[in-house]
Length: 193
Image 1 (cartoon, rainbow, N blue to C red):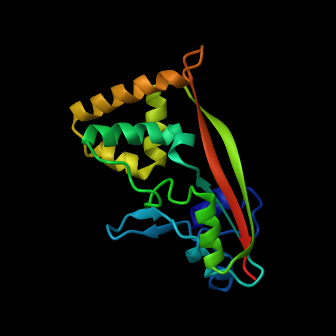
Image 2 (image 1 turned 60 degrees about the vertical axis):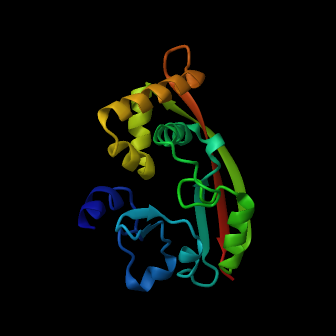
Image 3 (image 1 turned 90 degrees about the vertical axis):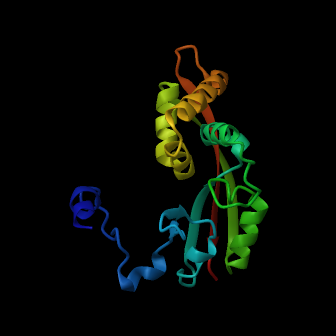
């Protein structure tokens, strides 16, 4: 906590920010992760957890990935891994990157959590990568399931998957050799009455 305070929080002039929420300010804290049964941190897939600690009038804001088809930066490597392993795709609503991708489901979860004044907006962007290797390295860092699956493969399996990903990357190649890949997020906010 002190390192963050000295190197980030104070230099940026963030007067009311800390890595750990003080007990008197816990009602302003929003959970982003949960501990799984395997003791690993998992992305939080139920906004009710965050809504419970909000005080009346408190606002919850979150951004989630839309469906896999709109996010090839993560979907292509995941599909290549699953195909290599002969595994079926996860069912809709399963925990993971796209667990809250359905706007109706997200609105229902926010409503069921007792929140109102729900607003949603879809944001589109383009991710730029210098190479296929840079894309895979970044995606492994950001997407825990991809990192875990890739780490458990032997060299031949990693090479086969990398070749599939490189072939799929051709669709996103730019004239300068870089990759430009779409990403789509669903941003939502809601208020506790």
